[in-house]
Length: 371
Image (cartoon, rainbow, N blue to C red; front, side):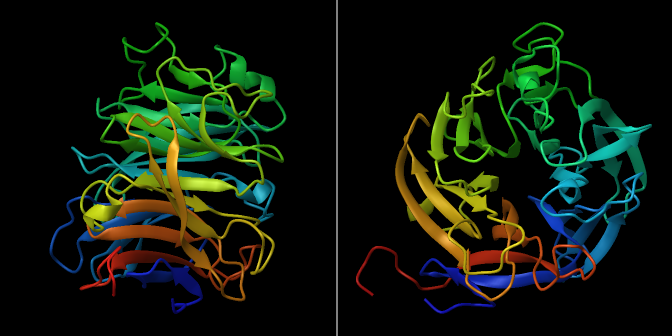
């Protein structure tokens, strides 16, 4: 159990540094079938304050898109500096990059999703959907995922000061939204003509699909208690506001700030870890280690039907002297990737130092046997 670069990791695994010196790396989208050349894209990373980076197989970070925000961030974390470019995903069939972000419209802030073409540089940027009411804070447009039905799923916060919107079927906030890839509303959505797939969420940050039950799972941040994980069903109502436990699979009464999540389901880790759920717990933005919560990644084994948790373990944790804040997390074809928002930088964004890491198994290690 030796720390590597300030991180402790579950026995039998090691952490590798992929890229550093990044400016608030928020979410990570691995390419599921990357090419074999050094300059082929390996993963795309959203930079909170207006960029997307592409990291190639040789671990070089290139600017894929920049100048994505039409306002100047103020770097206040937590607070208004939590806003910006958030979700990023690679659409499987085309390889196009989808990203979610805020933009300023007069005196108002709104959320949008764009679609970008090109491998190492965005050759075109098309707005897929926009006009989602927001605020310059958290509780904005967040995760993007592509379902088994080839539809685009978007999570949105409740707008922070307007929790009642999460229960308003006419308002896109506090929801999981479902769209065709061109931004139109599918005819088979739960409510005819509405993009709402499920409602009653407060600040849903992460979203991932589980192959074994073909279902969507999300993280949702509570007010002062009851952060949670929920299995999302079409037409479901998850209780906010004011309830954060309704429909929840699991909740933390002592808040941990759960962000991205993903399932190990394609052989990246040994079979013993198949179908386990990995969740990043960001913890407090302003406090250096050690702290009593967050700054870790946990793993869970769920029931087959996704209605309960059979086991819960800490998989990795930041134990260095800095801010260490895991936020983005996703399985690529060769391991588990995660972002450290701050790294050796600072919370005010003046000294970019965020990093992307990869977790891989140690060759020859035997799990659950005598060593």
